[in-house]
Image (tube, rainbow over all chains, first blue to last red; front, side, top):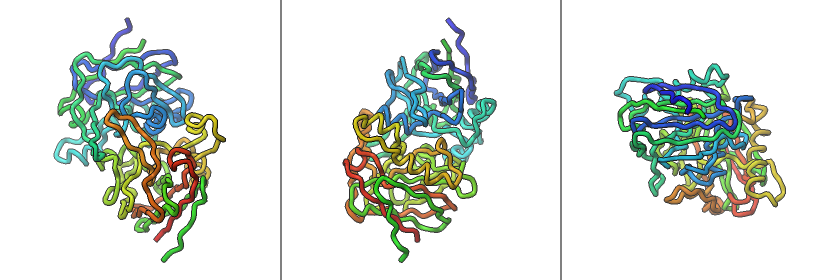
Length: 194
Length: 194
């Protein structure tokens, strides 16, 4: 059993994930979100793409059996297991700008965007190249009129999702910093590579 | 009255749109899609972002009064008029890869992606930097289970949408090349700048 690594509240990490390795993202305390990004190791201009993924998977409710695709139409990750089944792939990582927009009275924070930008910079990923993340455990229902809501995640302590890497990747991963996405609390995220 | 310009079937164009100018996109024959991209003139690394837009507009059904935002959280375009009210901001421009995926038996075509890449190259936009387009008139209902469908557009001949430029932009615009998005026919798109 490989060790489980903790991402502290409101922080983020980046690491390499080789083809064939499995990444399990765990919500240790429940009701927390993790923003996940993926880039091709060989050329980080190839990045995870919500548009390509929604095109090919033909669903916005991605879970076991679905794959996450790159902007070059290659499958990057496959969801192999998922005890939650509720994730978001529409919204961008929270940032100083989203904090100013949604929480003008609250203390500013660089958010998942800032955390991802710092963690991914050593891999050559520029801020402007950070796309929409696959927001693990994020609960974003869409009403019949198209309205988007952000509700607390339905994940319970110990819930997890496992991704199989289909190519050599650089992964960015956070414990989310926004107020709405995790019910107003800031919690850690755990992950394991196998 | 400024002249109306025609985009021939399965082709695309790019042009500058200054802050304060209005772009009207017209469906001259009905049931056709136009993929629209926007980049900041001063730095094309600033690009239209479906994620930021869905974040700030809090809806996937964008119409009159909604704004389209950049990856740097600046409002690029405002929808000032819209006789259709049905557009998509989830799916990527059709491409050789989507043709291979969805229409393996049909002749290959570079699609809106290829058309946009060629039209935008003189402005310094690389292929990998082409994001999800705002797909004007595209009819993409989402079922209660999250399933995405692509249906023929509801636009009738002469229907239009008008965007006000909120900053100096480079615009990419196509007459869509895919089979599903326009009911199997390939038609032109017209536009006017005022």
